Length: 353
Image (cartoon, rainbow, N blue to C red; front, side, top):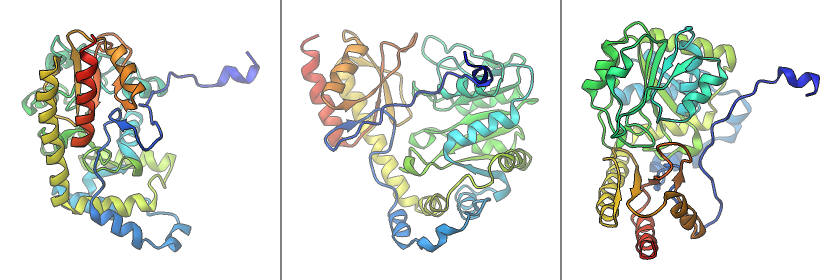
């Protein structure tokens, strides 16, 4: 080892899903929305003045914060925005998880959590999901330095009822609890109202899924003003201008169009429910997803081999090569046409298994 290498921080990075290129592929591997953003986003993009780009963007992202505050009926002092929910959650790890006690998150969950914990030197423990891939609230009664979990969970798609979320909150009043609601708009009930009752609760959401803006990188958190101020202090100590001007303007436009938002989320939910029927008829089993994906296992087909076969046909799904997950595939809900192509391939493939 060269002398300067001894001081390099070494971590095992998060591995995102493939981003294949091409016009004929079917991309069902990264839970992106198959429909375009709200029409107002395209209109605002066409009308954007390039002259504005020579100046720094508003560090407080006020136009986006105000749109979110109006949409969710909360004071703007209760909202923090960041460059995708990954940025928001990563900033929350850095801000709130500074105890010597371990942070708790599920063993099967968003795989960025252990990456942040290792990067920031945060001790952590991972209570195991039960045999049905569900979080057990009682596993979070133990002493800890903070709690974070997705609801619905990923990659399982299972939604935990709010009474169980509140059970975890009641047993963890002395630490910050983060509920990661990346998929909440596809059928679950948000914990946002609980932020009025629990000062230690931070609810995080994203524009990448239900608002069809993964390419813009917009996320936000809602919580007590003291939590938001603490997050902002850390942000301004690191990078004041984290969100660019187009993201601020276009994100605000996306929030304003609730009719379109309801239209595309309802369309995805309907396609998901049909997918449950079609895949079930083909012999797949899966948890009852409340997200824009299904986590499927087949009674005969190897997930690893099926993943490879789909990829050869330019149909991309997600495979997790790790214990308890390595015989399942996560399939994003695409358009009805994309899903029909998937079913057709599976029907033929399964005849050979």
